[in-house]
Image 1 (cartoon, rainbow, N blue to C red):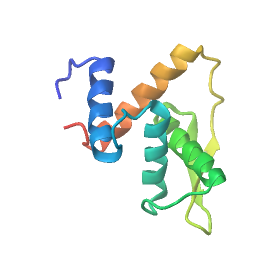
Image 2 (cartoon, rainbow, N blue to C red):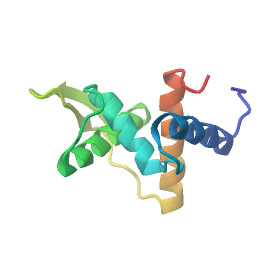
Image 3 (cartoon, helix red, strand yellow):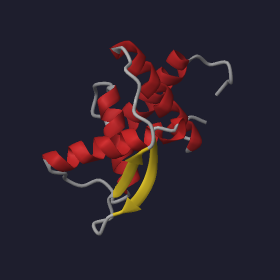
Image 4 (tube, rainbow, N blue to C red):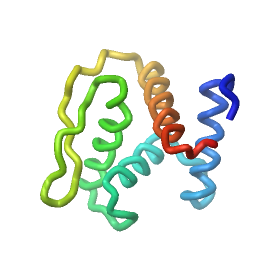
Length: 118
């Protein structure tokens, strides 16, 4: 991937790759991608998750994605193997569009660090 690719170009490529790999037709949205990151970070493979576990997966993903920005830091794994993070800095009050840009950037950085976009 070219260093000059825009955030939109990288996002579109990532959505296409993840959709082809994990979805049955419709493009994955940002929440679906965050969920996939949570499943990946939990490291227990794909399985049926209860509603509260799905919410916890989203939380794990957000913490992991925003860790490089200094908002969270990994703390420990609990007895069931779930990662826990501690808050280092409160998230700033961002407008919805700004939140989306931050999360998309963090998601792209995450997948680039895994060499997924190469």
